[in-house]
Each structure stands twice: as C-alpha cells, then as structure tokens.
Length: 455
Image 1 (cartoon, rainbow, N blue to C red):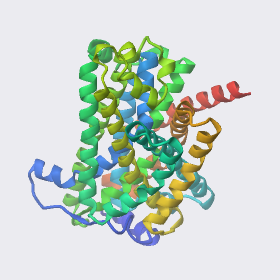
Image 2 (cartoon, rainbow, N blue to C red):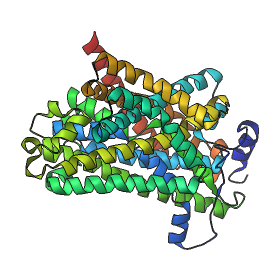
Image 3 (cartoon, one colour):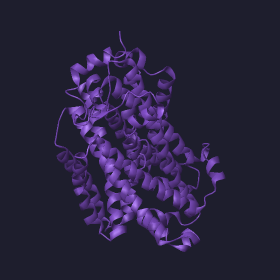
C-alpha cells in the first residue's frame, strides 16, 4: 500500500470537490532544492493561521493578565504557543496528505449526530471569534476617529467589501497583505514595550509554571489566554489553505517536501505570534501591574492609560495610544479575512453548502453583531461591558477547543486515513491526547466555578 492510498479512496467518496476550490492548488511552487527558496515558496498559510493567535481577543486577556498578575501568566502563553505549533502541524499534514480539510474529514469519518454536534460547536466558535473582531474594530474606530460604538459595530458589517476586493487580487497577495499587517502589530508593540522597560529577568523566570495559576481568578484569565491563543477555527483553516500549493501529489518526495516546509512556515509564523502575545503581557505588566488594574479592563481605558502620566509614567504620550489603536484596527481586519475563509471551509465541509463568500460573511457577521449591539444598548455603550463579553467569548473558545482537537488527533493517528508514512508518531499522539485531557479538565473546573458563582 502506498502512503496515500487510503487518503485517495476516502477523498473520492466524500470531498465533493476540493476545499476552497477557488484557491486550492492555485500557488505554484518551483522544484528548487534550496532551503530558503522552498521556505519562501511554501510561506504564507502560516501567516493567515498566526493571525488568529493575535486577534483582539488576545489583547484583553494578555494585557489584562499582565496588569492584574504581573508576569505570572507568561508560562501560559508559552504552553499555549507550543500546543498551537503541535496542533497546526497536525492540521496542515491532514490537509496535504488526505486532500481534505478537517471539516470534510469529520464529515467523512463520523456519524450524522456526532458530526452535527461538532458542526454546531465549530460554528459557535466562529461566532465567538467574530465577536472579538467586531468589538476590537468598533472600539478602534471610536478611539481613532470618534465613531460612536453602535455605529462602529454596524460599520464592521461592511468589511465584507474588503474581503471581496482582496479575493480578486489572488491568494498570494492576500498572504502578503496579512503579513504586512502582522508586522505593523509587531513593530508597534515592540516599540511600546521597549519604552515601558519591563523586568526581563522576572519575565523569563515566569516561563516556568507556578502553582498560583490554579487560583480561581488566575485560572479564569489563563483559560481566557488559552482560548484566545489556541483557537479551534484555525485547525479547520490550516487544513484547507495548506492545500493551496500546487505540486505533484503522486510523488512521495514532493509530498514530504510540502509537509516539511509547511511545518516550517507554520512554526515560524506561530513563533512570531508568540512574541507578540508576550509583548502584550509585558506591556500590561510593565506599565500597569500594581496599579488600579480594575480601571484598565477595556481597550478605551488602556488607550487613555498610555497617555496618562499617573499610570504609564514618564513614557506616556498620545503617540503610544494612537499606535495602540492603529494596531488594534490592523488586528481586527486581519482576523476578518481569516474568519471569513474559515466560515466557508466549515460550511462547505460539514454540510456541503456552497454560498457566495459575501453571503456567508454577511450572515456570520450579522449573527455576531447582534449580541454586541444588545450588550451595547443594555449597558449604555459601556466599553467595560463589551470587554467582559469579549473575555467570556475567549473562555468559550477554550471550552470548544477539545471538540476540534479530539477528531484531529484521531484522524492523524489513523493509518487507514493517513497511510503508514504520514500517521502521527506515537509521541505526537501522546502529546496531543495529553494536551486535550489537560484542557478538558481545566475547562470542567472553570465551568463548575462559573456555575457555582451564578447559582
């Protein structure tokens, strides 16, 4: 049996056409043997995946974690990033080897009831992700241009026009635009952290996990960071866009090259996301820890604090706060692009429904905008209420994560699905199941704590 016989037989029965057909196999890669040329050819999908690890949801959890608990949660960011690298490697390998994204593979290898539950959970995760984009974008518009929150939330619906424009430029150009926006975010926060002068000794020491993390408040914030960092929809996205490179899939050497350099691309980009998340926490810890962290719980308060000498000290300036808002807007727009692509992957893969991309985006965004508008009206435009909604959406993402991790681990650990060459090594499978078990136990604990608080 060849390495991809099983994948071929399954594909012929169940894929109903390639994943994201308009971009599948659309990027040619040269048959060059040089490492750098290969890496450049396969680079791009990792950037779109990394976007989900630095979206506005990360900002509240990471900066808030630093402001409330200092450098304590640095270890959570490190562990989340390592888990992300493992899971994204598995997702990309699934897509390249089987030529099916995770949604299609789930539909192929599960019963209707289980498939329906997984589809609903994944759609809810997409909506939770979208809530963060809506809130981040609306607040950025208010901070930069004075746009009222209700109007800003409504304007985020129109970002579908941005995506329609980008899709006409070609997938390679979308990758380049996303990478440029990531660099904007990186440069902004690197500059702000240098100005803030954090204690790097304490920060590095905090990469070692500490028992304090298990306390209720710290655990809630830690799970929010996990939910904001390791995002379930990225597993579906990566398994699809890893298929955008065109090469000879019948050649085992070519397949090995694709898997290898896709993994390199993913890990490099996720390392960049790890650096940005560390910068976010360092900024919160260096500038605001030990001060009134409760008054720094919203984007608007952070924006004001960066130009307030009483909170940010001598380094406070309008330039810092403006750069913060610019980076927030860039983050929201980046997440919009990847969220839309993922929504298309999930709908086509789980229920074989193909909709024009603008229809899919409009429906998803309208559903996500509704709770944000309701909260905005009920709380009189309170940014603090919106940020609580955002943090809760990130905790939900952490709860939803095992529903994606479990099928991904099962599929990539199956010789029947992956073939003997590409099936996970035993230690990869062990790590994946270990991460799933730990996150599930932590989620049960936080759900129980939440229910106890409510009732």
